[in-house]
Amino acid sequence: MKKVVVLLVCVVVVLVGYILSDKFEITKKNSDQIDIEVGEKYFDMGSKAYKENDINKAFKMFEKSCDAGYMDGCVTFGGFYYEGKGVAQDHKKALEIFKKACNKENKGGCYGLALLYKTGSGVSKDKNKAQEYFKKSCNLGYNSACKEISNEENILSQKVPENFKEAEREFKNNNFRKARSSASKACEEEYLEGCGMLGYLLSADMIEMLYKTKNEVEKKDLREKFLKVLVDTSNLCLENGSKYACKVGRFILLFSGGKMNEMTFNIFQKSCGLDAKECDWVASFYKEGEYVSKDLRQAKIYYKKACNAGNENSCENYRKLN
Image 1: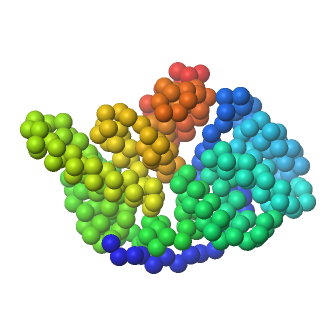
Image 2: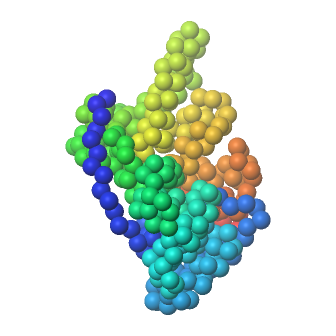
Image 3: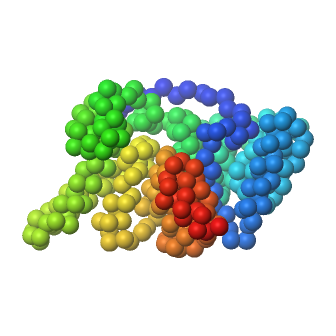
């Protein structure tokens, strides 16, 4: 596939506005000792105060939220120091707070850290470190970070072709044969999300064929072809941020007989960041203690996230945990 030339656009972001926007999605990993619910309550109080223009109260509530171990509270708290809202501007303090959140796999924390390294604010300017943290934030599901990555095949830089628009319409209508045909054409035009959808749909077909095939020689040949499709599709997810490619995690589990590894978990986690309905999978891993330590509070967070996105099964599972 030819390299797609990407024009990097410098985006000035107000981190406080970013955190409080409706588009922000929570991504966090906290230890069992941290009271996430207390932190979330302080975060909600801070958000309310901020919207009411009570900056001092908002600052104090976000500080308490961060102290309770709620990483979104930390990112917002750091944002006040970044912007100098309600407190003297202090980029070194913002750096310290963002680093804490990023180390807990929070995409907003990694994004803020990247911006500081990119501009040399509170730290020596370091393009490589900025790219490292932009990439980490992107992999955790924050699209604005993906736009900052020096990647010539960045999926967000590509113009959406008509073939892919048609593929998405057919996909939503469950006309998967037609969707695959249109996705294939979009992929031939080197549109990466088209290749991602094609990989996902091919995986769905191949897993069905694998279960139906009785001949061992044919099954072995099919498994080899299927493995290649899974590898290519996984790369489109992890390296290029294809939403459809990231749905392939379920087929990887089926192919491997239910065995989970770090790469597969990362695919599910990234899928959750790109499409909140997919967070149901991550929630179930925390609920059952599959690959990650069993953590019912984390399970509730991800079930709630998927529920809010319209996943009814997640809503039911969330209610059962309360």
